Image 1 (cartoon, rainbow, N blue to C red):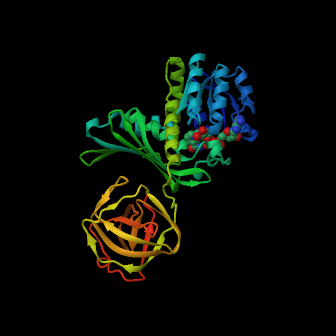
Image 2: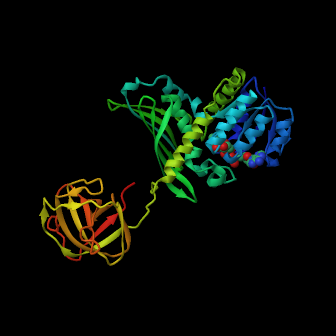
Image 3: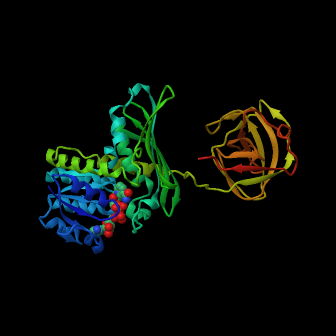
Length: 437
Ligand SMILES: NC(=O)c1ccc[n+]([C@@H]2O[C@H](COP(=O)([O-])OP(=O)(O)OC[C@H]3O[C@@H](n4cnc5c(N)ncnc54)[C@H](O)[C@@H]3O)[C@@H](O)[C@H]2O)c1
């Protein structure tokens, strides 16, 4: 089979070696905008700087696409239109509608559309998939894809450009992590996603939560901000407390050295997919869909992991209170956050109750006192109240019976605490800290 390659960047050498080692594949054309990269190729391979010319040259039966993410959709479209089989680096596309469209076009054209998910060929992932413990014994499965992104990029910084990459670690590492997990535990449904450590619109950290069809929880941690090196593994936690691990890098000592056997797997499987014909369904669109869902959920959230969204706010006690009540009859207000200005006074009230809905009654209360806020802030349910090194409790909400004079800020604590219990003195400072994400 005559193979062309479009894109001669960081990942291309792994494809080139795999093509070279495969007795049934021959590199017959290459394309890159950078003529210096073309000049480094084996002499005799025709060069192109325009991918449309390569695709129309009649020199290739199949093409490997290793371009920045935003170019996958247009170049795959052009390849399918030229009647060329395609293996495209992950993510197949940035948007799920594009991936579905490409799959439909490939089916119509009778061409193979194949996403190059290299981790599914990793020897440790394959072993785990083959030797997965009985599913009823599995508590949860955790996949980790941690690296320092700068160690994996070429000169062109498109990975760190949201428009060309499509996002950050979720769209970059998510596809291979999700695909490897799907090989091990089967179809996955996304239930939650939280993004974090966002720099110039690109997330360097994310946590995804998923479920298998039979309800096994699956967690994915994606981290672009490791100080150096890589952690890429899948850990199966069993109900008896033991674990079974596939460390994708174990035994592969050089940097990226596991990739050679994985890219050989891609090219052999691509060849098999072309031989099988268009009946084979590519997993690329399903994975693009999971990535898109993760962004939809993660970007809609107010908070980002590893990113403080507000400063600590200190409040100086101006009046102490020492009493408790079991029948106070406060009412949880409908607001989970309230703005307070510097200089405002509010009452700090502890409770052992956990009111949840607006209007819930709060009877068991202990009074700490009135405190003057030293800076403006937004107090929110989940914020923690600290006195020195001591965590007093967590804000559960507000009672507005004295508003607009002041709010009763309700602090959930293990027991009803008063100024006496904390040994508070007038002038002491209590600090409200943002809820841990
Ligand atoms: N780098 C990795 O470790 C890695 C691992 C797995 C998958 N991938 C995927 O492989 C793809 C490529 O990544 P990379 O790291 O090799 O990128 P890269 O930036 O190193 O290489 C991209 C190449 O494409 C060329 N190019 C850009 N626009 C072009 C155009 N219009 N026509 C022809 N050539 C053009 C560039 O000159 C460059 O040589 C991405 O989708 C990425 O997600 C990369």
